[in-house]
Amino acid sequence: MNFKLESKAIAAAVKKLKFRTQAFIDGKFVKAQSGKTFATENPATGQPLAQISECEARDVDHAVQAARKAFTSGVWSKMKPADRKKILLKFADLLETHAGELALLDTLEAGKPIGDCATMDIPDTILCIRWHAEAIDKIYQHVAPTGPENLALILREPVGVVGCVVPWNFPAQMVAWKIGPALATGNSVVLKPAELTSLSALRMAELAADAGVPAGVFNVVPGFGETAGQAIGRHMDVDMVAFTGSTEVGRYFLKYSAESNLKRIILECGGKSPQLVFADAPDLDNVASNAVSAAFWNMGENCSCGSRLIVHKQVKDELVSKIAKLTKTWKVGDPLDPQNRLGSLIEKPHLEKVLGYIAAGQSAGAKLVMGGRRILEKSGGYYVEPTIFDNVTNQMKIAREEIFGPVLSVISFSTEAEAVAIANDTDYGLAASLYTGDLNAAHRVARAIRAGTVSVNCFSEGDITTPFGGFKQSGFGGRDKSIWAHEQYTEQKTIWMQLA
Ligand code: NAP
Ligand code: MG
Image (cartoon, rainbow, N blue to C red; front, side):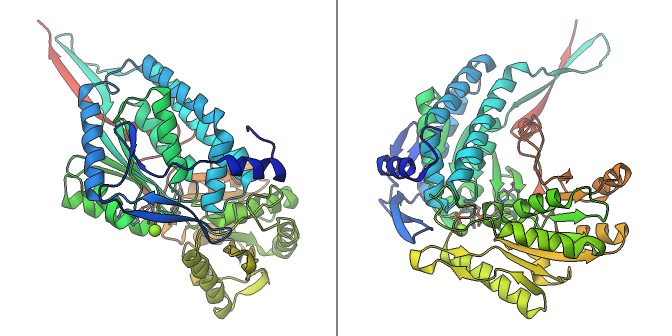
């Protein structure tokens, strides 16, 4: 980090911030063609931060044309992998030089605690770009086992123009998860950030250009989902869309594709992830500490949020009281104050949605153990207390729907079969955690759970080396992170040769 994580240094760094507010197309910042802008606000204060260019279909079209021109020219797509690597490593270095600035942009625009942005989001963003860059000149392709009269090459080639549509909960990091593998494999990108968080993406585009990513290869078109997002989804010259966001909007992209050019669609969507705690879980303090992170880290605005704690009835009361005690130490407040573990929710309508779920939990008869209220209202921000419900059944709305807020539902069980059935009784399948001292049970249950990532005796999404994505309605068509992410950004080609 380029400043100390203490209030004075943070305040000084905030004063120095400059916002990039225009679209980044064909290597330069440009206004939306309509001249229109929209306000982005700081959810910790409810005050506007900046006016952002509002891109619509014609701006998307401009960006797609620039991306196609760059792709066809080969300036990036046909560059030697070792040379692309050099530029992307320089990009990662520039991100590192400006890490503090990027962390502040995400904190200011998304209400995320500066401590998280500075020590997790931005370091992971940099690592992601670097990791995919380093991989590309070490990947070999295939020769098929044909007879001697033929030579068959099985190659992977960049898909072409890739649309990326991303959410607001990890603004910079979600950009990196998409553009890391997409650019490394030689594609051109048109990215639409969430309307609530455009600033870090725009700065990243500028830094990529500074590092030598050629004009047209990485374009950012801020704007609304219904206009700019839909225009990407329906564009006849976009070859694929990599989307992260809600399951509801993910469905639209499948429809856009079906109604346009059958572009490839990769979806990373929502979750309702279970945390299973067996009676022999080795260390309940460790479980409590992981469970609190799983439920409340990033204010629960996390796709892999462990929002359902499914716990053996023998240890339930002890664990819930440990979790409640620990949760009290997670301070809620100004995300620029590095002491705070929870910042504000992203926007007022979302706060109201989360409070609506809390009310639904209460009226369904779940027992409110702690939290449940909006707080710090005078700040103008959208803060809600971390909230724990006990005596939840898996049929209640709070156990079925993705709340995307700091709300934990505790459900108890008696047998392993029951625990697995509850865990799998969901439309989602993104992630799960389980806690047990029995190695056999750990293997058995990890395999029985229908989810893309299962962590054992911890809450984790793995790291950059492991693929991430969902089963069922949590995902479609591919995985983010790891070398498998390269597959979704490449098409397989067979070249079959007749030898004389
Ligand atoms: P969202 O409402 O689905 O939005 C995601 C993106 O889609 C935004 O850029 C949004 O633009 C755009 N969009 C919205 N409506 C659209 C439409 N009709 N056509 C085309 N694009 C449209 O999701 P969110 O609220 O930003 O993010 C939270 C969701 O993301 C949660 O469900 C969470 O689980 C999921 N998520 C999943 C992962 C994962 O890896 N699986 C990671 C992080 C988050 P606007 O901003 O203008 O609405
Ligand atoms: Mg929206």
